[in-house]
Image (tube, rainbow, N blue to C red; front, side):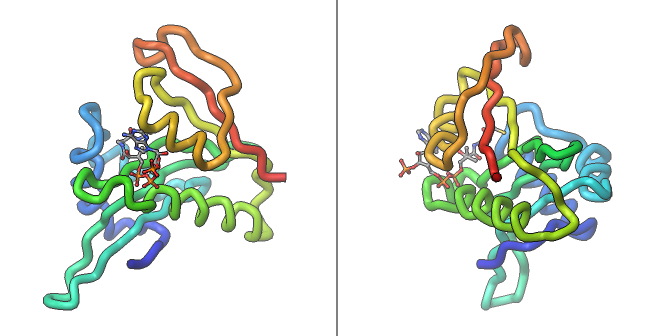
Length: 151
Ligand SMILES: CC(C)(COP(=O)(O)OP(=O)(O)OC[C@H]1O[C@@H](n2cnc3c(N)ncnc32)[C@H](O)[C@@H]1OP(=O)(O)O)[C@@H](O)C(=O)NCCC(=O)NCCS
């Protein structure tokens, strides 16, 4: 199992994972813009088959650095591989990268999550995020804004 920065050549893997993970998934154009954006920091957990050497994307995180904040746009684990620590590994990889890459000056990680997405909220809290505020009728249901301070 490898954690790698997502590349343009991973786009089809990413599209399939997104479709597996969300009812409202992004189209290929949005995903490719995100991968190519210079302010994006996106990682994936890949499994390489010993049998035919084919790659499979099990989990991914997409987000951008906006001024001194990193905003998570999506985090997703394929439904066959949930509750085995993969998204947690991606968050840890993100934190380490943001803290150690010298050209990055992110001081915090932020996200919006539907108040109805109890599993994701629990996941973020387990990884140290705190609820900061609630945005009313955001999705259209309400959303929590959550944050993890890095420094
Ligand atoms: C949220 C999500 C990314 C978590 O991925 P994961 O790889 O299963 O997460 P991890 O295995 O690293 O973490 C598991 C921990 O998160 C919490 N958690 C994750 N899913 C949960 C659920 N359905 N119910 C309750 N707690 C949950 C628990 O604390 C769990 O620890 P435990 O298994 O010891 O109880 C995954 O459920 C997912 O892809 N959901 C669909 C997409 C989504 O809603 N993304 C978030 C909004 S952008």
